[in-house]
Length: 281
Ligand code: GUN
Image 1 (tube, helix red, strand yellow):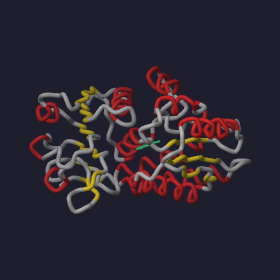
Image 2: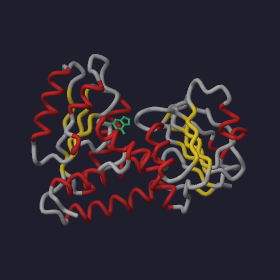
Image 3: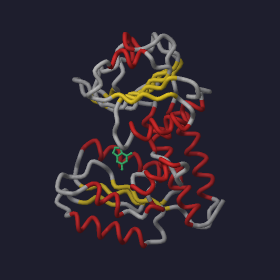
Image 4: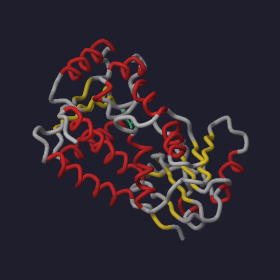
């Protein structure tokens, strides 16, 4: 039976550290989360981030905007937040409504306030070395692995999914820590064979039941990034937890695995941005 990678517990510890350091700064850090429209999943995520801000002593300077908000209005708001010295981090919750171009919006955020690490300049920094911060979800996965003494060096890591938010930066982080990395996606013909090579398997696809026990090597570490709803409306990941946990050495639960880590790393990224803006070590 696999050991559970308890993201909830580690996230609590990290948020405690952020709160202590935030309280010691001359000025409270500020995060502006912008939510456009009423996507139900996004509303849940944004509420979570607002709660985390309260717990960490970070000012919540964001707002909810109606679905009809134009791209120009959103860009004007980002401009104001870029210029506001009380704002250390700006996060535009994705996905945006169809009439707004995501790339244009992400490029408008001041890179020093880009706590998601989605601005192309920061993505470039990530490619060549050490950006100011790393994207919250993949970095949260790395921190969770580290907490349990799991290191990618010399191990075969298989990432399912190639999104800009998770799959691609996840692969880069595993590579940076000397893992041998394979990225699989919807056009990978031999998914099962690829997965069976994995010492560390990270799934970030968003399809319930994608990863079954016959795809997992005995003793592998299995990380489930997905947040899906099953037919009963219950939260679940990509991994068939009941059977895969019999075979894996370590596994993340859904919920309580990667999700809380994403949120905790966001708080840490806001703290790092605030320190940089306030020139603190
Ligand atoms: N939507 C889903 N995940 C994320 C995330 O990490 N950041 C933002 N901004 N939007 C998201």
